[in-house]
Amino acid sequence: MKKTSRYLSKTFFCLFFVSLLAFGCAHTRTVVIEIPPRIDLQPYQTIGIVGFTSNSTEKLNQIATQKFMGVIQGAQPQVRFLELGPEDQLVKKLGRERMDLETIRAIGKKYNVSSIFTGAYEITNLSPQVSFGKDLSSMDASMAVVISMVSKHLDTGTGVTIWTNSRQGHWKTAAVHRNSEDISFSLAFPEDQYGQDIEELAYALTDNFRHHFDRRRVPE
Image 1 (spheres, rainbow, N blue to C red):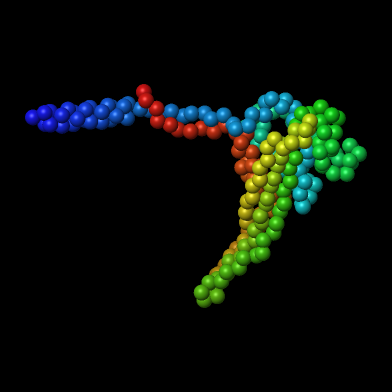
Image 2 (cartoon, rainbow, N blue to C red):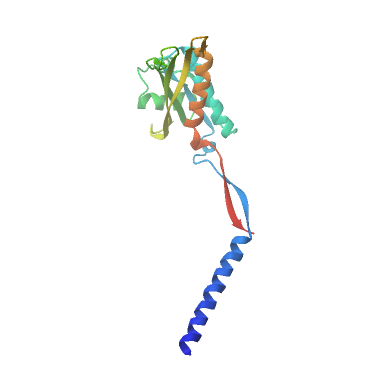
């Protein structure tokens, strides 16, 4: 009899506990939680930015620099940039030979910035890809590029790297399709296309400076 009572008591307790859990789960709601950026740039006030370098043209370097600034200020509108110009010209103006520790310190003293961003990207043309249909009546060909981008945020007092990140992307620049009846050709104009590609890379590169949002279930 005692064993039966104990069994019934344990059973009742388990059912009661499960019902509480079910009641709690049934009364929840979904909320959107704002997650602040991992890196807040406000403490740095005015930040120097050195023009991006590359294996491409000076015009595209200027576009890359502007795209980079734009995505950061889109994420943190209060950030103020002081544009320092192309790296080679800046280094020469400071009487230096390269962007080393002393050059970084000299930038801080001359332009009164506590930190600077530097960046570089590289465009690599891939070998054309060609494929034929089984009966050789159709053909597809395409050309693509790989763009790699890296950036650093440096302290001008000590020269230490505060933040660094890199990203790489793959984009098609031209395509040809031919069959027994027709032929089609598409071409992405390099300057326009590269500008869009670089903006995508810059956006991915600067994720640490962006607010994020997460949906979570919470009790009512």
